[in-house]
Image 1 (spheres, rainbow, N blue to C red):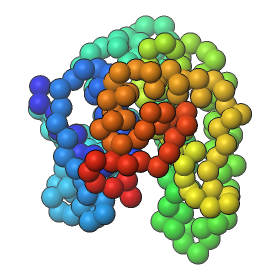
Image 2 (cartoon, one colour; image 1 turned 120 degrees about the vertical axis):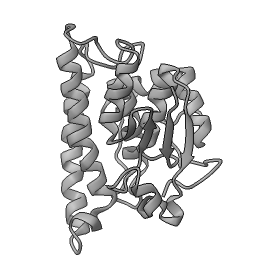
Image 3 (spheres, rainbow, N blue to C red; image 1 turned 90 degrees about the vertical axis):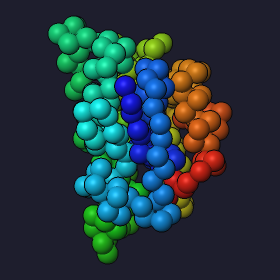
Image 4 (cartoon, one colour; image 1 turned 30 degrees about the vertical axis):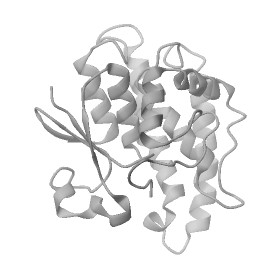
Length: 228
């Protein structure tokens, strides 16, 4: 199976790269040069008309939307990244995956790019969303003590959540910027477990994320391209 991941370093495509590595699926990468705004160009929009990263080309056509890509990849090796269809825990796994994709991830985007959502009131939006994000993380922290994720072997939730936690700790800059993740020990433990996986280490090396990209993140130093 031929897969091509269109990515930018330390972007949402990292979530997909983690899944590809964990599943052991062969793939190639194509850099989307954010510094040149390549995601807005006609060539990339022919693959993802929304101009967002990531996208992945498959034998069945191009896919976009991070959660949709994860679910499609999960179907290629059923049971490895989530409970099997109709298995106990499948519904719980999916509801938290979609909560992270549909609620937490958009909230982070609003804090990182407030000018896109509320021009002229960026500081107010960022402050409001900060409070919301802390509430969301507290709910996920409580769920992480259950059977749905944060186990010895990562699932789709772990692979989606760890990069989001990384970005919470790194961005946005300034005095009121990054969130302190110390109050979320279950999530930090999940990050440390993931970092020990060879698949996660390969992804971190490919994107210049350092040795502890999720539990003690630092700005990326990618071998190609730019995170912003």
